[in-house]
Length: 304
Image (cartoon, rainbow, N blue to C red; front, side, top):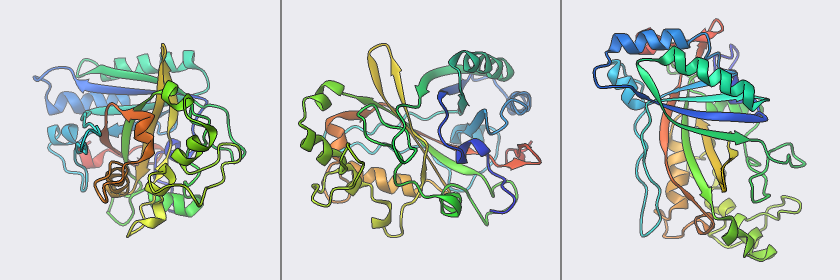
């Protein structure tokens, strides 16, 4: 993608710390004009690097716009496995090196969006213990994002192309907050842990003899037809004594994530990903991340 029209923070590695901030429309009387004015105020702050912006399907509808392929996150729960759908209106991934700075930036974003939008949910996240390959680790100690495509392949997987002005360079993102049961994880033996993930924690090598329920085998991107490549940018989070992973995956569409999540939940063959025995998603939403144009968010598809 020669002109690099995507929000740069999506392509960069995960930051030292981040905040995931979800906004709702403040009240039913908010008009399309109110929303447009709020987005105009937000635009200088949402530079695509410090603040990555995602627009929910309901907000697109409220603006009388249409983004091809964007829809609400489906509830993929089955047979006691919960994969909930919790639609969101507007999402900001606020990135940086210092949580204090991110707090001040969050307040600026909040004020720019007020009074049309109000904060619904905030999750603070952090990069944990870099592995040898440069990827951050999950709180279980396993590297996250090992199978991410790289270079041109990453751009091809993560960003829309050939869709026209205002769409090319945009990205579709799936966001889920997973809560870990670290007691259940710690109760497993070393070999059992490795077989849950399908990798050795000690050297991150994939295990050929892991069971079909191993996370690596459930989500092997090249095993799908067509291949289900996406760019993961997940980060650990904690609040008091609760902790887990903010799963964030960017794609040129929502198709790759949805096919992987269906397989994880056992919709394809009845085999449930072993991750569900030590962690569970408590929310799930889809957003559209607009492209950039001359260093600013390109919101023409939303009528701005």
